[in-house]
Image (cartoon, rainbow, N blue to C red):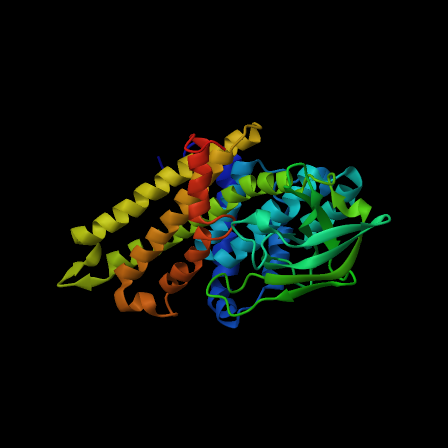
Length: 386
């Protein structure tokens, strides 16, 4: 059906604009930033100026008012060149801005969203050392103290949470017990610089080395009640809704990486010759490329359709899980075939294939592992009684 089949003229123009930006601004710096494990304030500033950091926010908050397909195209085209920059945009919009926009009150939106659309960042503190897939095992606690809440606990692997331009993070905490003994969860807006709150950059990553990943520690951190997101006890529901939407941006990252790896492998295989012929002419290689191209076509058409359903207000829990699972595993296949087609060169840092191979792995883990996506889907089709 082609890259731009079914898109509006505005969406096609947007893709061309983002692709040109990624090729001209990001690509020349990718290897250096990856090697240094360095977050780029310059690229992030330019992405903010392009409107990427407030992609789907209304103009009243300084956003670009993009529909969800258009936002996904932005993430996809960035990921085609560099997963790190795509992660900065995807996490900021889906996990940072999303909860504030969908669940925040008018005062919270007016206070934070204009800054977050214009260049500041916000994190989403869910994962803990002992609570990843099992979010219900969250240990971070919040205890009421007059008009304030005292938070104690820690979070780990939180994107965008410890840069110099980070305003704060949404923190999921246990605030009590519901009937039947189940934990009650509430989300709090915790600003960087709050006493008792520490955001520390994590280093030594295999992937997304130039995105910011953080460890958060809360030690008797005092937060006023007006920083509660929504109402007390709404946290788990907010978290699930956030992940539903966020999985679409992770899917876009998988789709973009698959496209980038495919483009790279196809170009190389048509130039590289063995026994007098381009290696693309050998059926075993041609079939690898055909499989990836087929997967990209299917992934793009399904992902865009689910984004349109989201814009129409439809529930997409099962569908977003399918998107995330399929696109992340497609990225795995594409990156693996890319390395294989390049042979020994695919193992060298000089070639993009090596980075594609590293970056794709997180897509099968972050925002719900592939195993969790299969659990979500199997529940939706009635495999379990719950």
